[in-house]
Image (cartoon, rainbow, N blue to C red; front, side):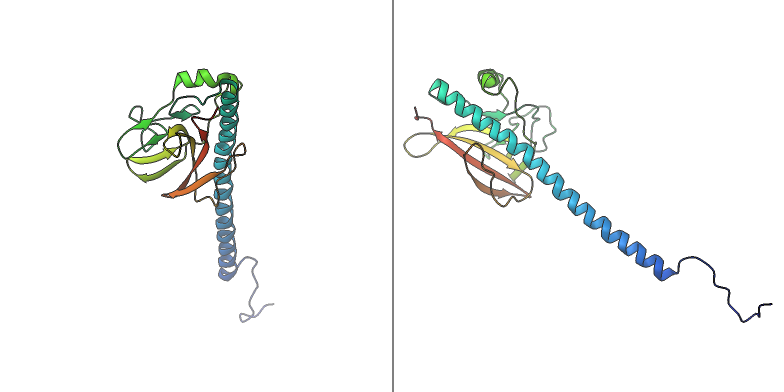
Amino acid sequence: MKSSFQRVRQSGFTIVELLIVIVVIGILATITIFAYNGVQERATNEKTSQALTAWVKALQLYKADKSQWPAYAICLGEGYSYGLSGTETSGVAQCRQSAAGSGYLENAGFKTALSPYTGGKQPTPSFVTARSTDTNWRRGLTYFFGGGGSGDLVYIEAAYKGNVTACPVAGGVTGNKAAWGDNTYCIYTLGLTTDS
């Protein structure tokens, strides 16, 4: 017979053991979330980098075939929305807006002209927006002519998620990096418009 002073050990967890398990689960969850976010960011940037490489090669083939760069200032790819939020159905810009209030849009003529060089597809980047101000931002990929040196230069701008350490090389072309907001945009110089 058991005395009233004897304790019967019951099975189960103590509060300390439960707290340790909760803390370990919390640490593992935090590590998993950070790892997932890093993988997601890399996947987003890889999609843009692959589209950029495809466009650089297509534009270089066009240039070799026609002895000139396409004379457009447009968004590369398809499916862009308007505005800084990227959710608007109309506006002045889809992939690039300058502080002056002008912007770049998708262009059907450009898509038709480059279709033989892209295999009939429109390589489309991730729609990441690098924001300097509400009226000066970049999204996805932008192709345009700009000023410089002995002739106008031909550029592609690419927006990447997060603060990338260096701009990815695309089709042998390196880019210059700028951090805007929480994201990065890189500008790639393809050549001079006067190149032949």
